[in-house]
Image 1 (tube, rainbow, N blue to C red):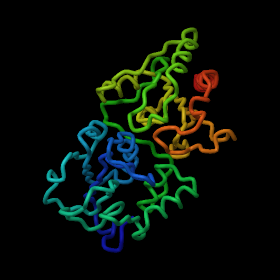
Image 2 (image 1 turned 90 degrees about the vertical axis):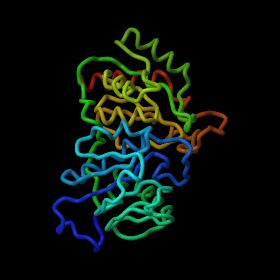
Image 3 (image 1 turned 45 degrees about the vertical axis):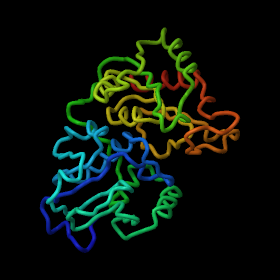
Length: 310
């Protein structure tokens, strides 16, 4: 995992700095820093499984800090100056616009100025991403490969206060999408129709915690099954080990590791939607792919999941 400059055998406990603020989406070809991607921060926590016995420091944005603070053994900062004077054995920089200038370190992977480095060598980012795409690698696999490791199904981590709940049979309707990806949105009319079908099926709840991350996570955790877009809610539901029905449109389900309790619905095999996934913020086609996912499809997925895991 480390270069020849430093050997793991020489160090009992390593000091590792992870830079992931959510200001960029690490593994997207096009980059935008306008909106913080909380989902990107959460799914980067899968790396922590590789460093269970090490001292981990994490530079995060204030908006995303609640996803990291409280994970055992992690020291979180929202500003570079808070780690001034520390020497790190390894820096994992997952932010394109975050410079390593001013940090003291023995080795690094990820971004450093205009360079992109894996555990093996400095590479062209787009070439590496195309290679990962050809190999159909999901996000977690890419992160592990960045460090020269193989992903074996490890899940995301959350602060310890969000203990996993398995009681109750409530279905959560996680209907809202962020401002960055309006093209992910299933029509609200469809959500309303689904709620009508659920009235005779069991208890359900509309999304809560729009302006409070802690309230939002606790609402998700109060549900047994989550219906969601490809969003932060999906990643949180995976971390909380919920049953999941996820609706995909402009983005690809192959980037998400899923679970045996998750059903992913999309139109990628429909000849009418050769554009799927387009990764566009707004749909420019006559028919929007995600709108073609029917209420009946979603309801059937819910009933099958319930039957399979009762």
